[in-house]
Length: 256
Image (cartoon, rainbow, N blue to C red; front, side, top):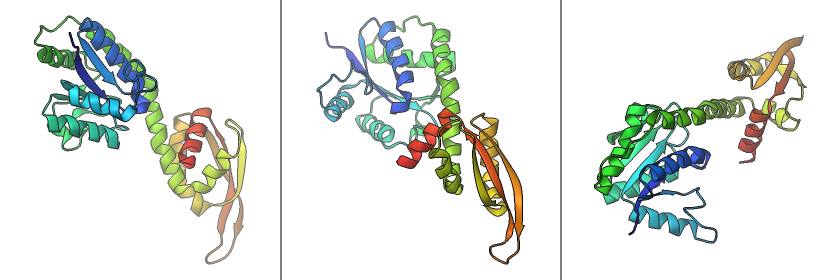
């Protein structure tokens, strides 16, 4: 008997959450359902063509679950896969997590019934949808335990999302400082001298935010004042130390 396929669309950074739902769904439906997860080795075997296998999954799935977060919702593949499901007129459930709410979904995904992954009552709707596609009764599920797994994933991931946003802002307005950070080791205290106050002020807000997240420690001390219509002003030294997570994130962003 061929299993019913449920396509679970996600970005690479959220594969852990995708596998949480894959395992829970397949366990709950006693092997009657196969959840297609593109990052899972049981879904795409070594040697198989990745794109061909995804195309097959999109063509054969009976329903689709979209993992929607502030990080994933603008990614091309999520929208491509959602469009494929839309064209086939199959049920599509946007599963919102990590700070994204159903009301935050962009068009046309917002026209679908969004579900909050950290709400036990809403999470059960996923299993009700799958049961309808199977023509079976809704199985018993420990929604509270599933939601606890979601929350365990979300806690550090939300921090990474915030750091990612701040890192992009720092690169955009303080590239000179980022270059100094990434050529040194993480947690090393470095001093960037001869920084004019007019160049420091625009990045102060994001530095304060990063310091509040314990991603950096920094200070700015004025050391000199020079006169001049265009080149004068107060200058000083930024002393800064960056933790491992932010250091790695900045290096990755700069390299790409």
